[in-house]
Each structure stands twice: as structure tokens, then as C-alpha cells.
Image 1 (cartoon, helix red, strand yellow):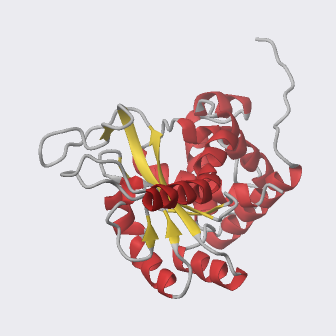
Image 2 (cartoon, rainbow, N blue to C red):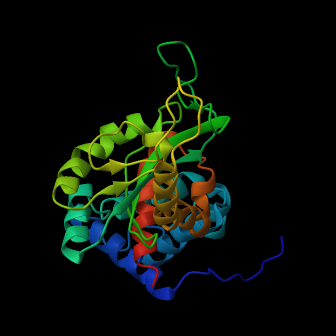
Length: 268
């Protein structure tokens, strides 16, 4: 074995922020002082290494001189503590309205995962996404006009369509926001979402002729306005590489994404 030194490429204040959350959690559940194998700071480092490097938990536990089971327990605890601090959708919309934002951008992303058991009513794999051609979880995002990630939903299986997932997690709160002057822009996958959810116009299926000039202009303006906001999912996935492929239970994808959102907001 050859030891070597490495640097964790995150701001130190981010590790300290997570360490404070973990220390507060330990006090809240009554953990005796000195009874843990790792202190809050070292546990925070383990959790952030997993998010940044998407490394195997066995290797992270080995580096921290703890067992693999303890490594998983510490990782899940860190994910839960962070996810508990993720903002709710209605709270986010109130902030957007108070800040005078012109609109918000709704988008969905598929986060791939390992194969998992479960079938739909038709007998198909529940977590298999025909769009991604892979097993994945569907997570809905809400972003500011400049692309800043604002909110993420709980996870739905990869076979669930974006519009269906949005109806479960997002649309009930987006409709009142639209009536109050905060519309939502979305792509063609949300066609038919309802009033206040602006999507590209499509030609009538029985009329093969191209769209009229004003409708094409509408789509171009919508695409240009919405495009910057759709970088939210890419920003989270590139900064927190664990979101590129989740090896934990796919039911944890929602909590993992919410944890990444909290970390992302505390990065600067």
C-alpha cells in the first residue's frame, strides 16, 4: 500500500457549513460526545467527497479508517441532514414573486441508476426510461431566469413522463403563482400542462403544413428565454458528480438531488 495526499476541491466554508449541520443533528438526537468514529468535520468531508467524486463508499470508508457499514450510515445521515434544509416549492415561489422575477423555468432530468426490481401495470420495468435507454429516476427542476437552480422535486421512476411527474409535484403550486403574475416556461414535453405554463406551439397533427410565422416567432422567443434557465440541471450534475449515476437505492435520488441543491446554494 502506498499512501498519498489529496485535496478536496470544495471551499472550506462549505465543509464547515455541513459540519455545523451534522453537529446540530447529533445534539438533537442526543449522540454522546466522543461516541462516533468520526467527528462532524471528517464526516462532512466524507459526504462531500462522495458528492464531488462519485467514489465508492468502500474506498471512502477505508480512507477514513471506518467500516463500510459505518461509511454508508454516515453518508445517508449527511444526505438526510442536507435534504431537510432544501426549500419547499411554495416557499421558493414566494421568494421569486417578492424578488420580482419575470418567470421561472420548469424542466425535468433523468438521473441514471443501477438496475432495480419493479414493474409497471403493463409488466415493463418501472425504473427503465425509454427516453434515456437506461434505468433512471425522474426529477423535476425549477430554475430562475438566469439558470440558478431553485427547487427540485422528489423522485419518480424513470418510466414516468415529465408532465405526469410535474402534475404530482409542481403544477398544483405553479398554477396559483401564474395567476399572481409569475408564469412558468417549459419545453414541449409539458404541452397540455394548463394555464400559466407556457410551452412551444405545435402544428396540428391533421395539418402537415408548417407553423404560421407568428407561431414560429413565439417558439423562438420562448426557446431563447427558456434556454438559460435549463442549465440548472446541468450545473448540479457537473458540480456534484454523484448525480451523474446514483449507485444507492434509486428511491434516494430525490433526497440526493435536494442535498446537492443545498450544497450548490452554499458554494459561494
